[in-house]
Amino acid sequence: MSSIAQPKTYLNYINGQWVSASTGEVEASINPAHKDEIVGYVQKSSLQDVNDAVAAAKQAQKAWKKLSGNARGEYLRKAADILESRIDEVATTATREMGKTFPETRGEAARGIAILRYYAGEGMRSIGDVIPSSDSEALMFTTRVPLGVVGAITPWNFPIAIPLWKVAPALVYGNTVVIKPASETAVTCALLMECFAEAGIPAGVINMVTGSGSVVGQGLVEHPDVNGITFTGSNSVGKQIGQAALARGAKYQLEMGGKNPVIVANDADLDLAVEATISGAFRSTGQKCTATSRVIVQSGVYEAFKAKLLEKTKEITVGDGMKPGIWMGPCSTEKQMQTVLNYINKGIEEGATLILGGKQLQEGEFAEGFYVEPTIFENVTSQMVIAQEEIFGPVLALMKVETIEEALQLANDVEFGLSASIFTTNIRKMLAFINEIDAGLVRINAESAGVELQAPFGGMKKSSSHSREQGRAAIEFFTSIKTIFVK
Ligand code: NDP
Image 1: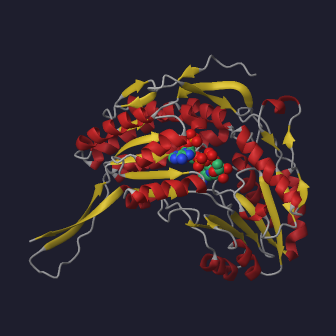
Image 2: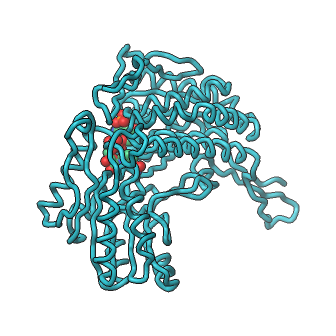
Image 3: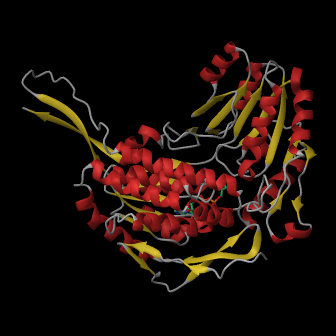
């Protein structure tokens, strides 16, 4: 166990107050690099706490929506400055809660700050159009109004950026928010709430209730006063949320999994392709919805690509993400590690050839955490489970094809459609890829992971409920359009 101060207990944030859960119970957030180390205790809330938070958010929305967009944005700007002053603390907490390396969580926190500033500016941009009426004496235009109370249910893999890219646009467009963060990273979310509180945001405008998905998450989804639900996480939970929201007429937005392909063409820059494949597949221990999980390589460069890929992947240093020089941290939880190991066994059973890794790391310090070796399979066919299901771990499937047409067919042969990339120097292949690939994020000569906060983010097929987050696209979910006719 590493030497860290006594764990603190974090409270719910409701109506501008830090409060204990009505159950009186707390649960521990564990460091996946040192499973005996408790990062902090968070509240194990009940439906009563959800009801209190929603009531506060509903009350606060009356005044919040009357502020100008610029005035609302000012709170985001202040929260950004406070987060910036605490960036190392927040990044350290995120690394200790979910395992990815400190440079990665620090980069994520920097992105969070940029997200807050971007949406602060959004409060001053256009929210409607003037449309010529067929009546020459009338003025017709659109404006946008907030949904009301928004429930945000967030995952553990981006514990800073995802909460912020949901909360910031929700707030700036005049909604109030109740957030339920993933239990694994609830302490990090509490630190984000501290930034909003310190920024002086009015009571009830943002609220956090921690606790289980099945109680707090579901309670939010089913609450009659929650007008919109924005969710990122697994497909199975997303589907339930979508159905429950639809049943009571609430607006919903789901961002879910991916099975993202990279195509490496015969004319690709192989060094670039190898570097991007490794970064896409193994950064964050493969726990990104945009992670690379299948590499489809044309036969002309297959052996050369494979040799370079193996050589470079063997150089990955695995360990505690807080240690300098570590490139890949542990899986975020023991359950996640078991899921990954089960998929690796499934791949072996199905007849894929394991060419690197495949095992849990358990020697010495590794015994303290949830570590899996960077793992590569070849001879993977599209029917195999490891070629179809999201693994969310450091596991890569290599597939060999003759033609680009075959590569595209394989790339699209999954239920997901989040992100996809191709490595080629041929413009014809690039254009074919842009036209044919089923993916919301299309990347040319760049890794499948990687999003920019000012651009729309989201997937096709089962990867999302077809709405988009981030950039200006966020306005579509967090507002409703009013069409106005003045005579
Ligand atoms: P979940 O979908 O279970 O969790 C995501 C969020 O939903 C968490 O805040 C969770 O709360 C909450 N939740 C869980 N059950 C419900 C419910 N019934 N109603 C409302 N909210 C609920 O994902 P997991 O963390 O269990 O990860 C499982 C798999 O999901 C991963 O292996 C990966 O494949 C995928 N995933 C995809 C992500 C993405 O970025 N697209 C992110 C995370 C996971 P709590 O934490 O308390 O359970």
